[in-house]
Image (cartoon, rainbow over all chains, first blue to last red; front, side, top):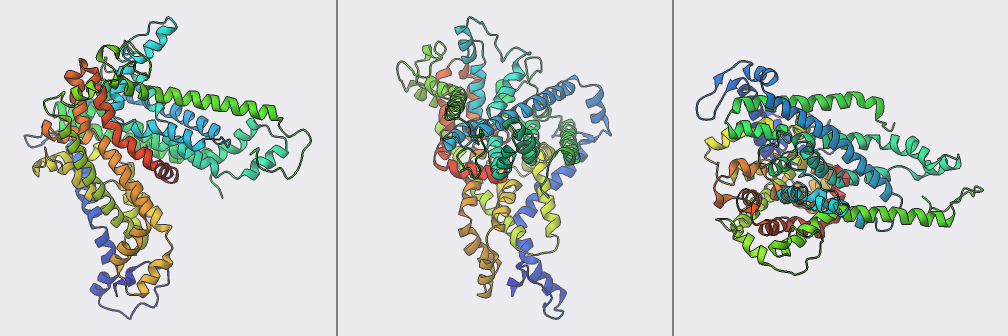
Length: 315
Length: 294
């Protein structure tokens, strides 16, 4: 009876007396592993195996055509001591993460709070604000962005109404990264939806009690809404930060794959792509990938460790 | 809060009607302003695609003075290979990805949510860890592997991983949904002698259409949008997806034919927009309950 293997949550004490171990494995474990078979092939063949070999490659020189040559820690040493483009790409990515994530979350929370006041037309607004999130990763939007912030683009046309002659935002290294940050903020819709769902979980009677005690709306926000929403803030911050680290397409399209002007949009992922598929320095690119993984892992670990000081969990 | 019936009346605590009206007007004003600001670029691109070429850069308005479909015809044949090829390729890749993802992820999710086997917790934890993994870490060995298999310049590197449930996010999504289905149903079926496969196929899947649809739609959209995968695996123009076609357009004729570029950009987001129009409720609920990234 293979159905035995279904996890019914019932006590399994009445198992038939000692059948052969093979038969038990077949009955107990085989269905689970058979259902997981595609995932197992993917996990070992496309995730774990490649991870190990990419770690190995990161200690090699490898150009794809000739076999890898052992390089020791050369790749890592070069990265941290003798590679201005690595340093530039790290700066660009950090700048992007540090500015785009908090601003995006602030917008998301602000609009969610506004919508949560029981506004009429909530679903319409919610959909409208969500649309950019859904479209934002597309090449089409990156193309549009490049046009909007060009010298003769939409933004400068609006500025010219007020007599301001704007620069070419895209080709000015002082502003080019900001156009990408604005693009990221423009997609605040999906964290907004998660905030809205979180706001709905807050029991209304807490506000009623607080206003009976004479607490102002402002105080209610700081003392009730925000503390109870911290788990959602935490969740959104982690997801958005990891996404920001991985961002690739907009920078690639807007800079034509170069990361210019003067490396000001050279996202880490873009630099990695150039090294791997432009110069075929696959060993070096693998090392870059592992540094990225270390960065994301450090960030996640740090967030979880500090979360107990600021994230409020229900008891 | 304000429209909840007050159980206790506190003297002076009731907000005056005019103030409620004012806050409502101000809030709607803010929201409408924000919506227009956010959607303006999209509407402008749509308008630009219908404008005569010479008008694109002179007008910031979203209503063209004259309508023309020229840019669409020009853009469609703007490259050596026509966009009908790119659209066909994108549809092939996206549809196979949807089939693969829904099938493979639901199998894995069923095992994690309903079956009992040794090591389940460990595998589940490992699966969750892959959610956080930046794809760059597996990128190069995967590329080497697919190259050795002779799969470069085919759609296989884009499709096969989907059949191996490589996008763990959807497993996670489905596990959460499956766990919400009452176990009594499985148990009843088991009494009738149904095995795991029949329970998966006859009970779980039919009861899970909302989550399967959500996974299918998101897989379609993300695959359709995907730029990086096609960029590294597809080199022949006849294999290009729409996103690669657009990128080539920006590199070559795009600089001279903005109308054609915008027209093709608009067409490239039409499928996503249609999904949005038809299934927005499902998409928004999917995000709200699981915290999806986009």
